[in-house]
Length: 436
Image (tube, rainbow, N blue to C red; front, side, top):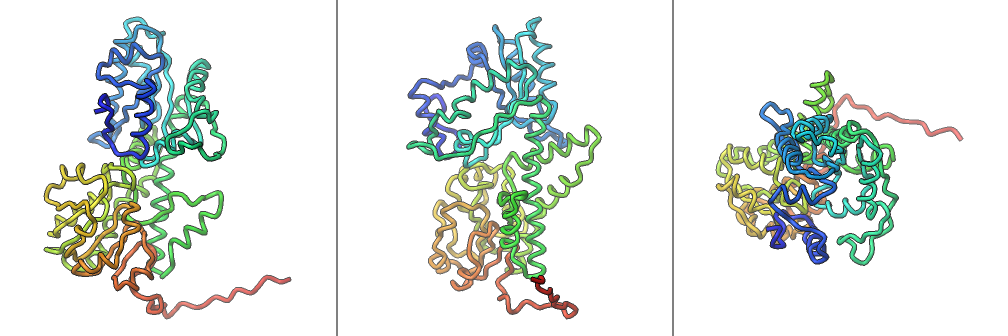
């Protein structure tokens, strides 16, 4: 498919980028490892570690690539690990290159260059990075990687996201460090983002208990530059391949060096419980789910991708099916990938068709098409006007004005604020004004 000019995944702007590179004869594809290895001066290994049976990261794919490089190389190579791998994986990479190099181990330099690309915005992230991290053992490796990335660092390239010229951006920091530190930066960054999301979700649960609004709380928190506003969204939790896998890998790797990273275990547990929170809302509204028609709005783990790996929607569908619900689903890009795992679900490209005769709709992905959905029209085709908003996309007041029973996360329920009971033992605290 790549040779023919196609793209096997959905990622905004990626098709345009590849078409431009092919036209300029700056990219080619081959399934022959020897051809690729011998032609290159620098080799980026983009295979990632995968979760093993005991939750430890399986690096067998990385090992196989390293053996191929060692076997086929006929000239010096800079070998760069860029996929998601645990700290100290490059030690093993160097050992394999040396063991299979037939006395030519001095031909290989090893480096680490973790990526920080987000699915859905990967092209923009690549051309406008906050930082580029390289872990090296020799000054020459740092110089080579700086040269490779110079069009990005110096802003001399135009990205396909902004063909008329990229907007001003802060300077990209080129971080040169040791290999171990570079690997750790990737795991530490992803795990911290997962931690922020789980923290915000616990805040949402607290807000529901006391009648506070989580979006007001997290917005005010984010105004503090030490905290920031990103990754404080609440709802169904995080999915995709990177955050769940990197979180689990970091927990396991930390244990292997004698560190109990308990706070990350809590973040993982909280994220797993988000589906339970959602199902509690569905059951509270519908009672028994046997025979109920429930529409899942969004299958991809986030908008602007067709990736369903570790997507909350899939875990939710599985639970709904187990309780006897009739499940329908709609998504702009991820239907084909989901059908293979859930053939018993009915799929619709048209959102309104998916909502016809539904007892409830559950919002699982923040696609723009769902943000602008005409709920007045949707309500006319639903059996019951019930929405469980797992991404807090809509205004509580607007949905209530349209006659919907609307449940979001951390923003209260469909009960008007005036009806919230205040515990009898609660007392108002009067805080005196500051003296002039």
